Amino acid sequence: MTEPGTVTERDPAADPSAGAPWTLISGAVKGVAKKYSQDRSALVPVAGGRAVVLTVADGHGSAAHFRSDLGARWAVEEFTACARAFAREVVRVGGDAAHFTGLREEARRLPQQVGHRWHERALLYDRNSPAHGPAAARRARSPRTSPPTAAP
Image 1 (cartoon, rainbow, N blue to C red):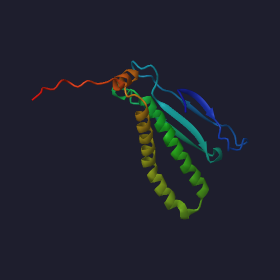
Image 2 (image 1 turned 60 degrees about the vertical axis):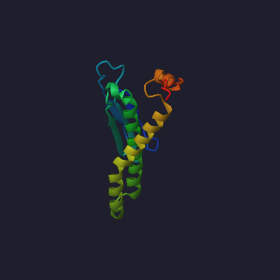
Image 3 (image 1 turned 135 degrees about the horizontal axis):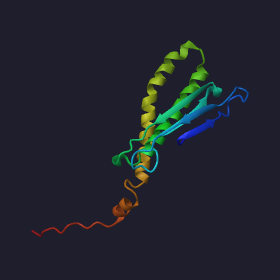
């Protein structure tokens, strides 16, 4: 995963004599009143370096979406994982036209797979992290008192 800047990655399975590595040059603009950019990107060489999966996600950046940097990171990670698996299958099938229908169906399922995986990560994070920081967690743990009720 990358922060804004320049990153060069090599596919460990790629033939080292196959030429120059892929290079990702990325940039992001920090939003007004933001401490850091909420955008994410990644470059993952596949198929022995013959192809690349390039993924970009833009964080929401509003007060209501204060964890959008996480959402953007998860979107990049989950899409990259799904696309990498798909690329491996494409390479495995090769030029065998008998498998093209199956590949097309698998490609059509990619958006749902990515969305499901992202949603599962968000739910897991939400269950294990306070929604609005440590103060909210303390409030949630403090004993609550009920308002007095009138006796009949």
